[in-house]
Amino acid sequence: MLHPMAKARTAAEGTVPPPRAPASEPPAALTVADDPVIALRGAAVRVAGRALWSGVDLCIGAGEFVAVLGPNGVGKSTMIKVLLGMLPAADGEVRVLGARPGQANHRIGYLPQRRSFDPSMRIRGVDVVRLGLDGDRWGIPLWPFGARRRAARRRIEEVIELVGASTYAYRPIGTCSGGEQQRLLIAQALVRRPELLLLDEPLDSLDLPNQSAVTALISRICHQENVAVVMVAHDVNPILHHLDRVLYLAEGGAASGTPEEVITSPTLTRLYGTPVEVLRTSAGRLAVIGQPEAPALHTDRHADRHAVGPAAGGDHAAG
Amino acid sequence: MLLAETAAGPAWSWNLITDVQEMWSFPFMVNAFRAGTIVAVVSAAMGYFVVLRRQTFAAHTLSTVAFPGAAGAVLLGISAVYGYFTVCVAAAVVIAAVGWRGGGGGADEAALTGTVQAFLPACGFLFIALYKGLLGGPQSLLFGTFLGITTSQVTVLLGVGAAVLAALALIGRPLLFASVDPQVAAGRGVPVRALSVTFLVLLGAATAEASQITGTLLVFALMVIPAATAQTTTGRPGTGLALAVFLALAATWLGLTTAYYWPYPLGFFVTSYAFAGYLLVRSGRTLHTWLSRTRAPLLYKEATA
Image (cartoon, rainbow over all chains, first blue to last red; front, side, top):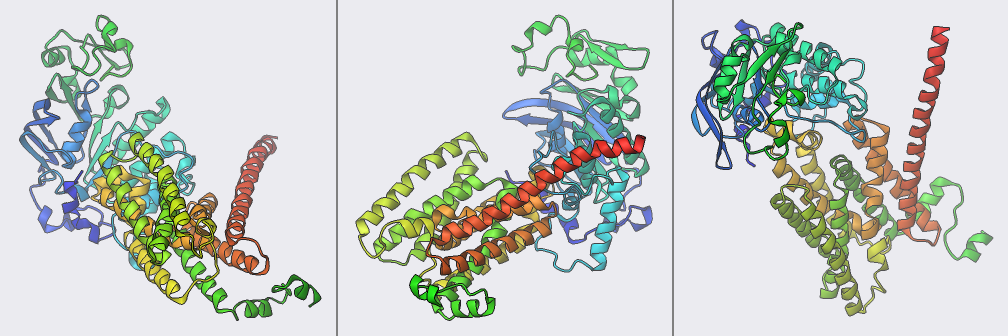
């Protein structure tokens, strides 16, 4: 596969981008202050001739925490791929950081789905973070004492401190636990001071305490460092009270807005085209009852669960 | 002195300087050391990435096709050196092409490679039988020899080795990124696919080099063992790479010296030294984890007491 973002590696020349203060912003980025980080208008996508979703409108500003929700196979990860320019939008308009998708990837931190390093991976966490900073540069740095190298080292220490990984960053990453690896990978995604973080199910395969700790970390980064975050999630509950906005994909359509607007019985009933009820527990957790399965993908496997609804299964949006 | 005369060969005198001086008074030994040094450095550096990328199967395939390549070249009356390089690089391109079509590391690829791995050495065996010349059987091609390395052969090794190392230095960092974390590397615009193909071609050249010293069957002695030892020891990429090169050099030099004084095959000595180093590091590591596991509760008890 040819990655269109290969074209957009202008930032590869420098090592550490300066801290983002309004004054130090390059002239090219001097657009209106509240220019959206992501703007989708009537966006649609097709995979292998099948329309996954269409008519998606979304506008995400700087420092907003947005979740992409929906049942399995609805095209949540595909949304991330579209935003990265790895997959073209079939219809509508998609703008990422004021450019076409793939043109501004050096300003995006990306965390793909379900990555883990097995114990035989004998490379330190700090080296994995460092690859996020300068791993795409050609040649081998031979002189390790320059000012640029010092700045790079400082930035790596800083970002490892930020995610709270200082105690295990110098161990081989394969020997770290899933939560520790996820924090190091978030540090890797953050090391270049991106303006946008795209996270594909970062809480997957983490236990509950780690889920809430990693969520709190992402939320803190999002609001403190003013980084817009788009997170694909299959369960909204661990992230619910951190979210500014959700994009709910289902049945080829989409609804976006604040969680209170979108995850409601009327909105989801309209989206699914079938009666759906959203229940709220006393602790504020949400359960979506009666939503049908994702089209085509799992119909035979989960046929018996249709009558009960997905509340019994854990793998559903807001489940 | 008496021992030396009865053994009818060079004797080890424990005076290192005179020993080395005596050994290097023979041009063939000087060439063997030169060639061994070049091959050790190139193999270990490539090997570091082979182990990191878990491409030992691909490396093994390349080394098995090296044998029919060399045998075929000899049969055609060309120097075996060119046979090694042509066939190894061609095989690397084929593996890369098959991997491309199969979407990278599919079961298809493994079955196909296994099939070819059986057929090509058989062809090599036939070529040797047809040749009936000075080769005296497949042994030196399979298990390596240090006798009769010519100066022009050393020049070829040096040229190819320098080119491989230069290319590796150029692509080293993105290659490390693509090996450790291909998805994010692709997201950052690293040409993961092109790097994988380039790496295989470089691996073909490096395998062809190593085959000429350790023989096609013992290529891993210099390619995988030092790198695996280094990666067991350290998680730092730079240190690991340097350590792998150092270990490969040590195994080669010790092996060559031993083979000069002892009338047994070079391949065995080089492999044994490399393997001994691996065993040492592995057991040291096991001991370390065992100690830290048994000591941790003790410390904890002391702390709470």
